[in-house]
Length: 170
Image 1 (cartoon, rainbow, N blue to C red):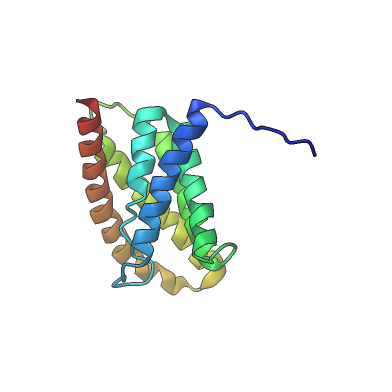
Image 2 (image 1 turned 60 degrees about the vertical axis):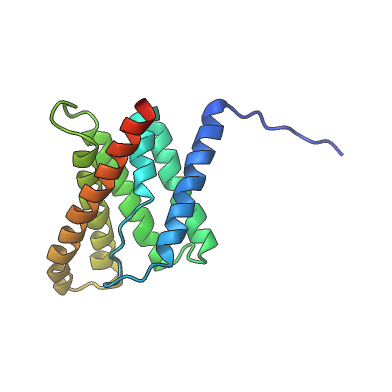
């Protein structure tokens, strides 16, 4: 029987480690009760932001997408509506990060990017909810609640990321 060895790179190992941390954080978050369905702090996104700042967009995207797929498999949610919501939020969040990472770093920090990503994530989820799960205009009434959560958790996650980046720099 012939075996094939896959050659891995240092980047592959880095992505795997960061994705494993993000998956672990996501799993911890999954067991925390939520006051409102769909409102979670998104602590795994701290790892995505960290990866973005330390290693670039490609690494951050791999970490984020691997987290969504692996977590959904581990939680038994793969190809479910929850998976669709998570994936849509993640993809729109990555698009927002890609656009905003080109903003002047003098005025836009990890906190700003975290807030943009959080709003994009919520927007992606609400689009899926409106178009697929609850095709009713009443979904718009959820926007202020989810926007407030995105702002609060975006600031908190951005502050944590900034602290991690400062600690790793010293």
